[in-house]
Amino acid sequence: MGISRPFPNSVNEQLTGNMITRLYRPPEILFGSKHYNQSVDMWSFGCTIAELFLSQNKKHFFHANSEIEQLCVIFQIRGAANESNWTDCTKLSLYMDFQDLQAQDLQELIPNAPKECIQIIDQLLQLDPKKRSDINKVIYYIFQKKQFYIFFLRFQRINGQMKMKKKGQIN
Image (cartoon, rainbow, N blue to C red; front, side):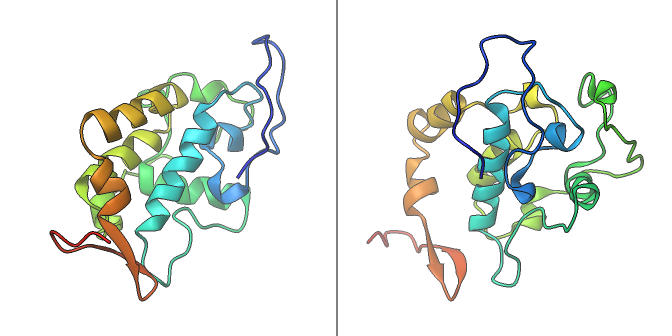
């Protein structure tokens, strides 16, 4: 989804905006941010988890054909970015106002996903990169909260769709 490289030691060092496959690119990069961190990878991870549960006829969670359309699709699902849900988003060089777009219910959009997965997807797909879960929080949730089974054992691909395994069916 991106390129493996170390993050700069200085917060003033600018990074490229042409990073990460567009369909997995977070809104801060689409808005022109040149200063970002590992939270961009967590956004991509959230997209990937969501896609595990999509129907056979939908391949990508945020499917679009251009960067502007990509932002539209993101905000149609997650709600429009504004100062109340993403501090300083209006200061990004390519910021555009997508007013009147309300967040949709992820469980309704991804009905095949268990609610525990929806919670993780919601935490990973936060518009504000500072509010996104980091990998430590995700691992804690999966392992310490005994959710490993739900994430890795409880679903299987049936006819191209992710389906929940029946209780007691692990193979």
